[in-house]
Image (tube, rainbow, N blue to C red; front, side, top):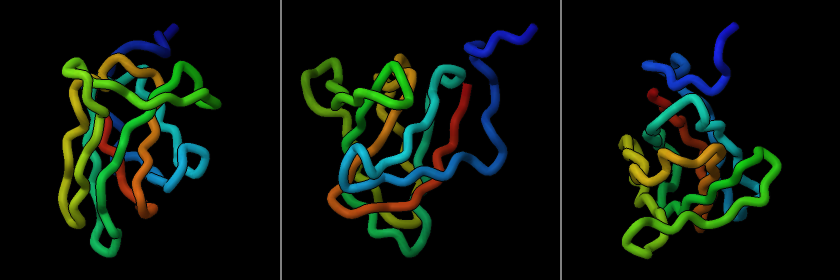
Amino acid sequence: MANPNAITRSGPIGGVKMTIGTTVAASTAVAMASYSAFSVAVPTGQPGGLCTWYASHSPQGPFSQVILSDGTLAQTTMITDRVHIAPPELFSVLFVKGVAPVANQVVVMLKG
């Protein structure tokens, strides 16, 4: 029987489509239990902007802002047509959502 929480060495081919909404409720939750890191690809045509990361123990929430070890918010400045590495401190979260001032449709690349 496979362990559903085992960390894999690769992720879903093609990544996972994610909505980074303007609110937590409007954003897509991505399951991180089997993965240790992720990157965010912002396709051409998306607005980009500053993404603040939220985490939860459940896909239904509640989701809370992630605070990094230096006391600052976990954030990623997204630039169109670029791939951005998520903060390493997100390793321990089970579910993650992103929130930005303007909604983006991005691809999350997960890696074990």
